[in-house]
Length: 169
Image 1 (cartoon, rainbow, N blue to C red):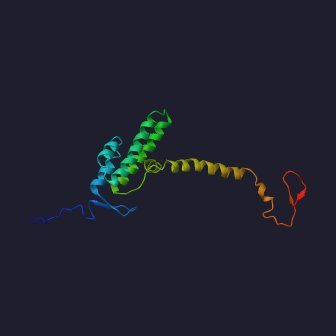
Image 2: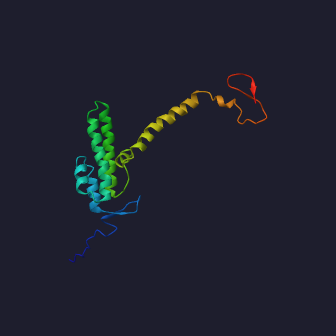
């Protein structure tokens, strides 16, 4: 019985060991993908960040994992709502783990911005949404008084002043 020789795949092979990130087009070796995914085991994120700092891909994912780890510690001290927030952290860990294992440079929502130092962007998002909702409700609830005002004023027509009913020129 003859067993055919099976060629061992190499790390240079595109079918094995190397993933091309759709976001950047850069190739991420399998070893880096594994280490980046390993960093999402919360406490290991600090160790991985300290050891594999030279890899931009590992650094990208380990920073997000560190933020998730710190959030999970903070949520432990919140009595009832903290349990729900821990589920969000678990979702972030699974999301980040899957993306790191596949070689994607995809950020975990909100956590990625914190990890990249874009905290102001998060505040704009979090504060901007309720403000837009409040402004929308305010416009919907209160009648629009601007409908009765003329859209344009010509120089020849008299205009009423706000404090009196006498026309001014």
